[in-house]
Length: 202
Image (cartoon, rainbow, N blue to C red; front, side, top):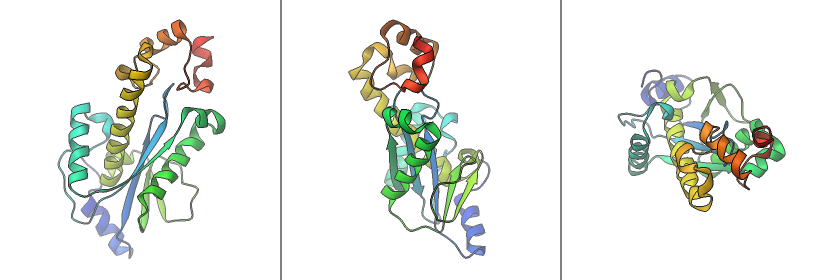
């Protein structure tokens, strides 16, 4: 990937007197069904792994491969999940931020800086840097985007077995034409975000 490698990022942070950087990203924000899931990832100094990039640029097989390689390489990972019901209660922006905070809590690692994909700052008193297109520009954030995507896709495959009429295995809860047709035909399920889907099934 172009942009900030872990070496370049660590070099910048070293000049600022900081060296421990965590990348964080979320997935599922625009879906009609399922949770929003965030990942927080710490990569040790000197970490190197070919092929890490924004998860949207990778095939599912490639994401799974890189995910397993991250685990084998000892990447520290935290996952945060916010359900569809909670999204309806607090809104998707707050849910996304909450998922990222949860991921950091699960990661449970001291860090000098958190690089967050996007423009929003987390509601935490810690050094952080929102980076638009961070999943394409910053290695730890790209790794977090892959981890979050793999975990959420696996969850949606599980939900597909519980609710086969919606085709979650194909669209992962996004608002495809196929998904919208199934909503019109079957109505919404407990996995659907009612504040997102009511117009679809009206």
